[in-house]
Structure formats: C-alpha cells, structure tokens
Length: 482
Image (cartoon, rainbow, N blue to C red; front, side, top):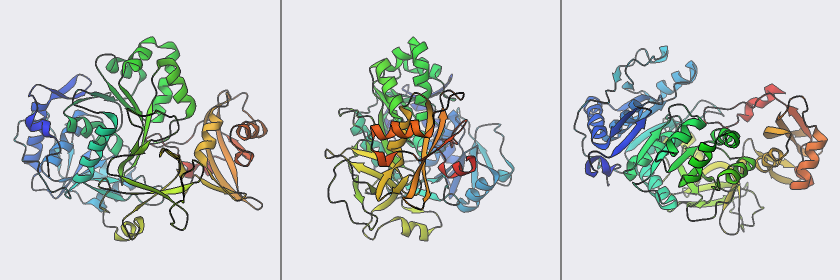
C-alpha cells in the first residue's frame, strides 16, 4: 500500500512536475493544489472531472486520488446522449472543472468545483488500500452504451511500474505529448506516469509537429502519441530539419491506441534513425505488452507481456493455442494486477468478460512469434475475417495496402459471400483522388506481399476514414459510406 506519487511528499520542492504551455507547477505547488482539491471533495463518494487538456484536469485527478475518491473523466466532446448516460450511471456528487469552463446542459444540475492551481492545501496520506477504486473510465461504446471500467489503485501502480521496467523510465525523463486526458493513454500513462516516476510532463495542449519539435528540442526525452499524430510527424519530416533533430535526440518514441502503419514506421526511422516502439493495452486492462527499450523495435509488433501480466491466445472454443508459430490467430486473454475490477452497475457484463479461472477476454485477435513477440491483427468483432476456410486479420492487409503508393489511408472489413463465407473489402483514401487505385491493382499488390487468399475482392474509395478522438478507425460506420 505504497503511495502512488512518492515525489509529491518526498521529492525536491522545486522539481518541475507539470507544464501546459506557459503554465506549470512544481511538485511542491502540485502537492499544495491537489491538497486543496482533496480538502474540498473529501466527503464525496465519486467525482466527475471535465477533462479538458488543461493544467486543472491534472490537478483535479491527482487531488481526487489523494482524497481516495474515484474520479470519472468526462470527454468534453461527448454528445448529449452519451454524457447523460455516463452521468446517470456513475452518479458523481460534483464535477471538477477549470475556472470559467463552459459546461453542457447535462451537467447543469451537478454541483461545480472550480480548480485553483495556485491554492494551498495539505494532501492526505496516499496509503489507501490497493483495491480502492481510483478511476472509472468509460469505454468507447462501439457495441452499446459505454460501460464504466472501475480501475483500482493497484492497476495504476502495477502498470506504471511495469512500463518503468520495460522503458527504463526514470525521474530524469521529460515526457512530451498532446493526448486527450479523458482516457487511459493520455491521463494514466501521460500524466500519472511521469508523476509516479518523479519526472515531468509537458503537455502540448493541441498536438502539432511544431510543438513536438519545440518540446523535444528543449529537454524532452520521451514522446507518446497515436498513429494519426505520428502520421502527421512523418508527413512533416522532409521539410522540417528541427523536427528531425528533435526526434533523433529523443530517448524513446512510443505509439499506442491503434496500430502504427508500417510505412509511417519506416519513414520516421529513415529520417531520424529512431524507431517508434508500440505497446498494447485497453481501458479494462491498462497496459498488457510493450516493446522494451532494450529489445528489438520490430515494426508491427506490440512487444512482449509486461512484468506481472500473463497473456495467452485461445481458439474460438477457449482452448489455448498449441504453439506460437507467428501465423496461428487466437484471441488474447490476460490475467494480472493490471486489470479493472468490474463494469460499474453491470455484473452481467463483468461476468461475461472473464473466464472461470480469471482470464479477461479482450476481444483482440493476435499472433505470437516463437520469441514471444505479439502482433495484433484486429478486433474479433470487426477485424477477424473468415474467408475460404482461413482466419484472416484485417491489420496485416491494411499494412500491405498502405505500402501501395496510391493509398493514403486504408481500412479492411469483411462482408458476407455465398462462396467464401466472407469476402475481404478494402476502404481506401487515395493519395491522389484523380487516380484512385482499382480493385485488381490492389488485389495483386496484396497477393504478392501476403497470400492470394488475403487479397481484397471489393474496394471502396473515400475522402477520409471515420475516426474517434483517439484516432481509431470506426469500422462499424463504414457501411454508411459505401
């Protein structure tokens, strides 16, 4: 039951902790401001946090954790229906906001506490029970209303310590990112991660390659991003020598939340000499695997299981795969201290998510190489295509399509076929809309790189792929674009 953030009590008072543009807090100032929040909300059962990309969001979350009150991060871009569902489900006693923040009507009846980052308070002891709920983070709700994953303090501590082991993450590191703060990636890894190590974080507010160059070029050592961000970086590199220099000087470049396309991996490595490493996690599990800082940065893999995490691949009937040969596809199941405890108010969904012996069914499909490296091939519900007797992961076809010079973006789905069971459908954003690559051209391209049975049978051309706030392609909405 050690404290989540030892540096708040033990670190040098003047050590930088958080910076959002020209606004920053030392560890001493953060401890005081978080203590003031904790004093104001100490009697609450649960609090919402209006998770704008501001200093106040970080202070509010640390204050809630210090008070041992579960925080519910709210996406400021949530629609009225989704936000109403989350509030009705989580029943927070109040909402923490930045001063003057405009709130939607759904929050009108909730008491509001504005966070003063210059306030002074005394943070209570942090030695709460490891099972105490720390956060309730709502899933994306792609298969129904969002579910609130209850994340205990144990899961945050174990994930961040495991990543410290994998990435050699220390208090000397300065993390740069521009991720949203209502989700695991930006909030847990991107804000709480540096604070647990006693290091510092510089949040860009709004992501831009120029911001990355500026912060990495002036002392930043690590960069966290999603594929959309790294794609924009790759596009900017040929004409931005300062960005090249900044990335080349970084200790670690990490991508997550979705697969980073192979061509962006290669463009960044070619320009900077540095390879982006990937990791794999979920709202319910925090982090499961990572490419290690001292390991091989093999593009297309998400590394090996983190310390303390058990991972297996299983057949449709739940039987573990007999061997890991780099080709056989199975569903990922995980077990360990990094897991959530339950879906709030959903005992049925919680029970369905776990096997009888405690393995969490992720719904993600992967192959595992003989040396233990994991390669994600997609979601079981949307990315596993059963065609002609083969199990095919959409991810590897998408990567192959992205290697074609006429393809800017690509997504792959399956649709019913009377002969094959399912046929492979490609959704392509052409590099030049005047000359979109046709189905035969792309089918031959994929067949040469992978195998004939993995070639697309149908190609749809789009102006853009639908994506959510984390940059993930929303495949369930692709049908409406046909």
